[in-house]
Figure 1 (cartoon, rainbow over the protein chains, first blue to last red):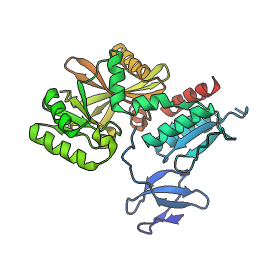
Figure 2: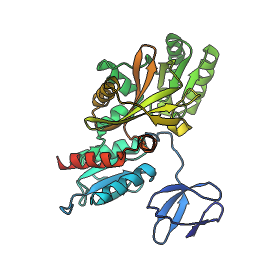
Figure 3: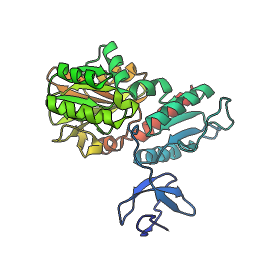
Amino acid sequence: MTECPECAASVENHDKVLGEVFPCPDCGTELEVEAVDPFAVQPAPREAEDWGE
Amino acid sequence: MSDGFRLGLFTTIVRPEEKAILAAAEARGIPVQRLDDGEVTFGLERPEGLPDVVLNRSVSHTRALYAALCFDHYGVPSVNGAQVLELAGDKVRTSLRLSARGIPTPRTVVALSPEAALRAVASIGYPAVLKPAVGSWGRLMAKVDGPDAAEQIVEHKSALGSAIHSVYYVQEFVPKPDRDLRVLVVGDEAVGAMYRRSTAWRTNAARGATVEPAPLGPELRELALRAAEAVGGGVLAVDLMEAPRGLVVHEVNPTPEFKALGSATGLDLAGAIVDYAVGVGRR
């Protein structure tokens, strides 16, 4: 368990993997798993101009 | 599998697609070497500890392309390879290649200055569609309904300032049903197809289009395989529209998202992609 860097809500690691992007369950900010053990998250990188499929 | 074979997974972020790839590799007993596109550095000499093949899932066209060039240099095959990314990651190059291979595609005009862009739009006729040459998810695409809109949109694009927006890719607006088609090609196989339905003119799943499985008839299959082969082949999502004159290919995506297609069809697409990449690595 860790805290959302935006809203400080508790965020749990339910089988998440390094680099996984998911929304904070409280404020919806996109978060990225920075480390699995101990669990740490950071704001997900913002979409850049050349991102795509 | 315990022969030391490793699958490299090159990513920007881990989305459901990459998570499914990790799970598919684990289910097959294939060790995965994670490579973060923001962390890796590339020297001119071949480093130690490289994987046997790299599944390139970077969402950044630039990072994906330069990494693939470096992996090529080290003799490590990438899925998709650098030449495929160069072609399919750029709509201008894709259109040129599709046209050269006689694959039906929307009428397209490329212009390299704002003034020429206005003439290009006028020559296509209204409505026309202006797209960035690089990028996807429908971002910064504009439907141009008339000359006034063309002037405003071209002015806005030139104000964006970046080099890529100084290339104006103008396409006819194809009057299609409220849906388009996506076919996922993996190697020599068209593995699945779906309709993407939206009442809006952009039918990207990223823009909220709903999806449903589509029958993979011979015409659709053949066209998708030809389009994929035209850009060099590999793992490619071919997007098509049902134009009045028949199916037209409007995009070939070299780093495809496949969550929506997997949900629509129930197919194990991550498994197919991992199997293909492993096959490339073992060639």
